[in-house]
Image (cartoon, rainbow, N blue to C red; front, side, top):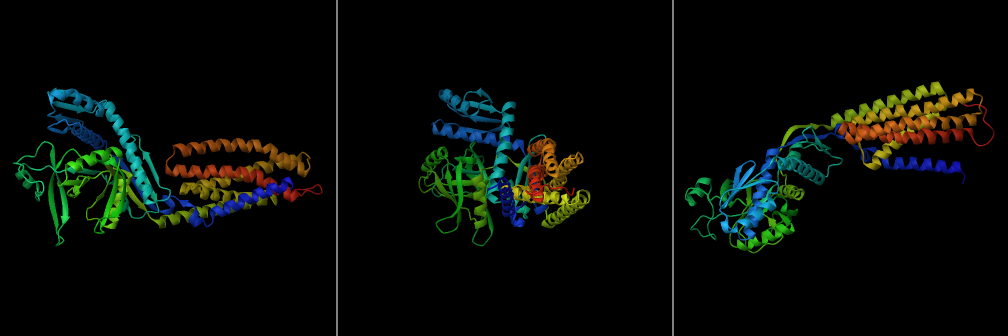
Amino acid sequence: MSNLAWKWILIAVVVAAAVWFVYPPKDTINLGLDLRGGVHVLMQVDIDSAIEYERDLVQSRIGQELKREGIPYESISKVDLDTFELRGTPPAQRSQVREILDRHVTGWDLSEPAAGVWRGGITAPVRSVIKESAVEATLNTLRNRVDQLGVREPLIQLQGLAGDRILIQLPGVEDISEVQDILDTAALLEWKEMSYPPDVDPQTWRPGPDRADILRHFGGALPADTEIYEQVVTDENGTEVRIAWPLKKVSTIIGNDIRMARRSADEWGEPAISFELTQDAAKRFSTATQENIGRVMAIVLDKQVISAPTIQSQIFDQGIINGAFSVESAEKLALQLRSGALPTEIRVIEERTVGPSLGLDSIKAGILASVIGFLGITIAMLIYYRMSGINAILALALNVLIVLGAMAYSGATLTLPGIAGLVLVIGMAVDSNVLIFERIREELRLGKTVRSAVDQGFRMAFGTILDCNVTTLVSAFFLFSYGTGPVRGFAVSLFIGLVASMFTAVFVSRRIFELVLGRGAQAEALSI
């Protein structure tokens, strides 16, 4: 098979692949938020809440380890946003307590103002680390939640000079309230032990409807290691009833101790959530449940009690959460638990919904602009280069097809700036043909034969075309690397279009000339 035949086979394969990937364009081309419509949300991470979360987590871990080591203590509680205080540890076990604290508050300002009293304060370097890790963890958690929503081509990225804002764009999503509920819910799940008043039977005692009732049982003041959480339940008459639970401050299970969560059903067939714990959390949980058989342990979600089961037997690394869930609420909570708890509060700064009608108008306007530009170039090339202009038009049409096929294959998102980039590519692609055609004209004026003029025209113009496109490709690369959503959309279409134009303007256009000139007698004229 001749060398020319192989070249035409390559062109045919490229064209067929482009058509295959791009058809039907409605299903294969990913449209951005500005074209498809969807949800745009700008959130800001609350750094103070991240500090508070870290302090609470450290308090919980220290309390758990003291309990595991058999070291008694009176309380562990916050002093202010940056500081916690541990009280009532035995002076005889000072070195053991210090060792435990050193493991959990590395880099903190640790002091011992009195015997058996320890204070840990967050320092400026630790605060900076907490801020960075909180923003990164929040970004990853939000990304996990969005991925599980099944949104195609979402945009989730940091924004702003302070580095504490997160931009989320979800093309094709219309219900902004549901999305916001999933994104900004902390989903901080905790298992807490009941704090029983003195002189009550743990097997039969149940808390009252409000804080005053609880305080009455405790003689007017809560123990230092206890705080009150509220639960809202619905009775048989459909009336909401509030229950106040006195629970230990130190949680047995907290935050990301949950390895997996999924919607399931309880023993009565009602929606529930099955969960699996990490290896370390499973050890703590099995010990706690063994110690609390016959007693209540409350399941707390975002500071609200959702269930308070009585422990019937020791539980290891798996369990079920009951809480009067619907199928939808159980699925939503399982999604949030799987993706991890948000380590901080996030505040919505801006939110808007882009309707699909606006996207449709943008698509029509973009297509109209592209068609007008293509027709304008077609007329100009036919007038100026006569029949050879058809060569450039065919190469240009193939260039657009290859760009769309490449975007469909790679899953790139087409945005309104991307359409602008596509229109720009049309103009830049025809520039390459203009450079080649003008070079061929010069060679013909010098008295070269048609075939020689074509060969020299392509050879001499190639270096200039390569230099121009490479510099623009570098610009497109940096636009994509450091730009935001609209800029990246422009850079994607520009980059792919320039690579395609190198193929169509240089390789395909030359094959068309070779086909027209034929391999027989010497051509005497060229319509250019």
